[in-house]
Length: 262
Image 1 (cartoon, rainbow, N blue to C red):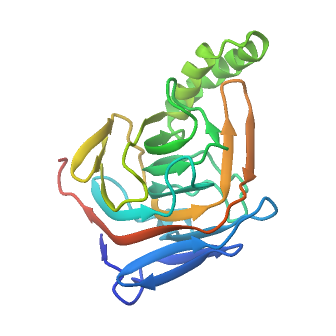
Image 2 (cartoon, rainbow, N blue to C red; image 1 turned 45 degrees about the vertical axis):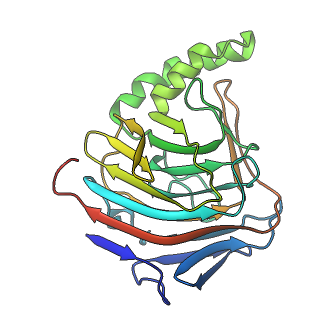
């Protein structure tokens, strides 16, 4: 499997566009702009391309592969509202935000400060991240009861450390904050291998995770007004942000299978 799209005049036939609540897609000067003019709390707004087919069994990407995306965003981390990014996931939510399954993802992911997805101890619950999540793995079940018990303890005592430990184990999350200025053009590379995931920005390795989602996933690149809260105290909430005009520019996307681990 191979995709190499520089967005020269037309959108590659591999992609499906998903434009919701005022989301727009525009091609100009060999650049795809995913954007919306405004967003509010009353409706979900999303501008997206993906290769999600009608059945999950149709997801086409699995390790070993390499993804290279050249991209920039309209606002810096902390100012951009909602979520945005690109990479691979199992589309656990419907187009209307209904939760259908536990998540698997390996991607470059941004969430704004209204989000608080506090999955990894020591890391903020929002920001521009290289991230791996692999909840759908057999050993996750081992951590469900300890997580429930320690969340109860966190609510009563305020001590979130034990719950945070088991939350990370249950979710199967590893991540790092990216220092790259989101408003500048950068080349983002992901090597998704059977035994690990390697993230690079402008050819410099910024993160390596020993967690690697198994099975097939789909590609997605998007910008929306969504936020999520998931904390060791058991808080779980989803909602929509208010924003003015925002966009994600993509100059090129290349995805290729690797014959062997790099």
